[in-house]
Image (cartoon, rainbow, N blue to C red; front, side, top):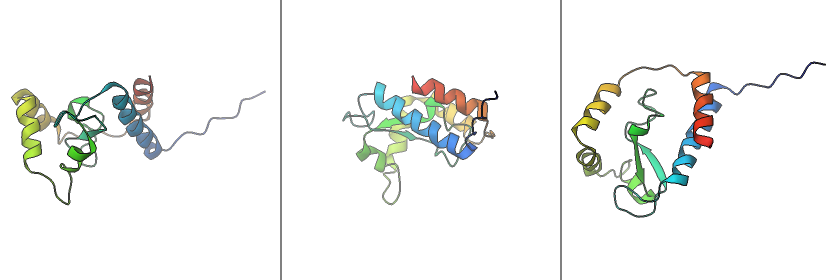
Length: 122
C-alpha cells in the first residue's frame, strides 16, 4: 500500500516558518537586550530581511533587543544613532563583514530552509 505524498510547503511558507523558528530559538537562549540591558524580546535584522536574502539567516546580522530598542531601528521614528552604536560595539571586522555581504545574492533553497528549521527548533 502506498503512503500518501506529503504536501510540500511553498518556499514562502518555509521562509516564514524558518523566520519564526529563528526568533523562537533566540528567545529561548538570549536574556538581555544588547542595546539597553532590559529583557530580550526580538532579533532585529541589521540589514533588513527584504534587503538581503544572503544575510537573512546569518546570526552575525542579528541585533538582540527588547521591543523598545527594536522600534528605534525602524520608521516612523528611527534613532540614527542605533546603527552606529551597534557598529561601534561590534567593531570594524563586523562592519567589514556586513558591508561585504549585504549585496550578495542568494536564491531561496528548500533544503537549506528545511535545515534551518531543524537547527533552530532544537
